[in-house]
Image 1 (cartoon, rainbow, N blue to C red):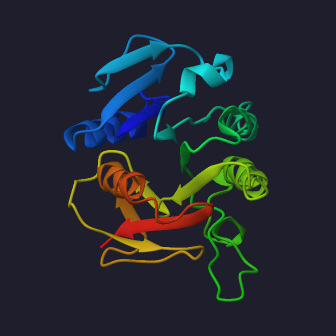
Image 2: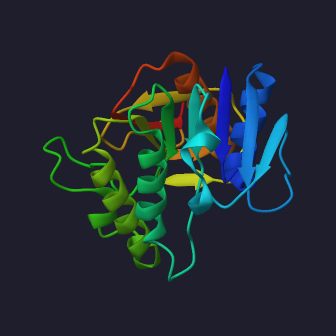
Length: 208
């Protein structure tokens, strides 16, 4: 497979790139600075400067973009909209590294994780911004998107166990609760890239 990873130098992007390369995919990293990933090819270009021709010919594009400073959460919507516009009407899949805050915690799907008392206030603006981006993405029937939410505890330096559980719109738990490492998340995303089982769906992953 030919796969592009946008914002590949980030912690999630780096591990996703490594996982894809190890599986034999031909990966192009799109980065703003010097490429620090295992990708065979690299393009030094800001996400917001990408054009449709930059992403042409890929089987899938991974959106690993993250905006973490207090003033940048709205970029989750603007960046995702930009990538979706570039891929509109094509067969290229868009795999989005999503957030957990918008996962539902009840069967009726009326309460999300970020609405629970336990959810940290400091993360609520980010969760809200990512939820808005997902809501907008759900309206796109012109893009072959998949939104992959991690567990509530998304551990950058967690161990790679090689196992995970796949869920849907609701927060699920595994043997360690709602936890997954970036490395195991990368496995789940690579599996979805290869299978294409959840086009225009949001799925969630947790450590088994």
